[in-house]
Length: 253
Image 1 (cartoon, rainbow, N blue to C red):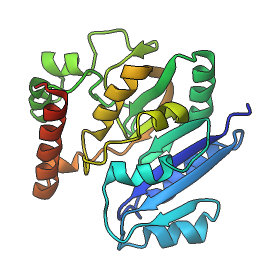
Image 2 (image 1 turned 60 degrees about the vertical axis):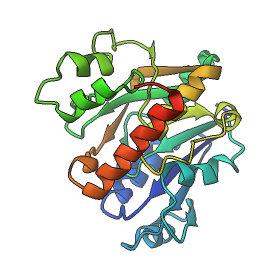
Image 3 (image 1 turned 30 degrees about the horizontal axis):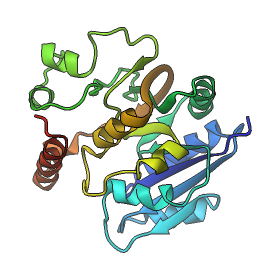
């Protein structure tokens, strides 16, 4: 495979998870031409220092302040010249050569601009994540979820469809996604008007205007999903602000 793959991680005080993420990334990318970039948004816990000391193959860009998720990734997106680009959270664990699998599938399906893998908890359970465009009713159902997903959450996560095979989706989580770099650049990367939250839904929507976004269950990553905005008032306010921006931009609710 001659396709160069780049990847970016935006960090902010992620010293507790970044080592395992990087360890699995480099274990799982030995057979591909891969370059990783980390944009650190002003961490105070030693995250960038740890990466620079232990992973010299990673290019680390330090921001003096937290510019947000999308704006951080855009710093890299605007400069890379790869064939494919991976958006990776600092709490992701790669499984089974996932990036190579995804690149191979996209090579076979040139109409796909974004590929989203199966996302699981560390114990192997599937994470129930939105795959249809966000709507207020879905978001309320997600906030009020119980042990088992109700009708609206099942609809939002497309659990009413056959997810055992690839399927086109409206919404892909930003914790891990692989895109054609050309498509990503053509749509202008992330809308950095979102500080955090909903920038992935916005990006997916714009990719679907020029290409296809597809869920690919044959590739799997594990995600340590904290749902911090449910417990942190500041993050909850950011979540609400981003939600309002999304609904106003796309004139939908």
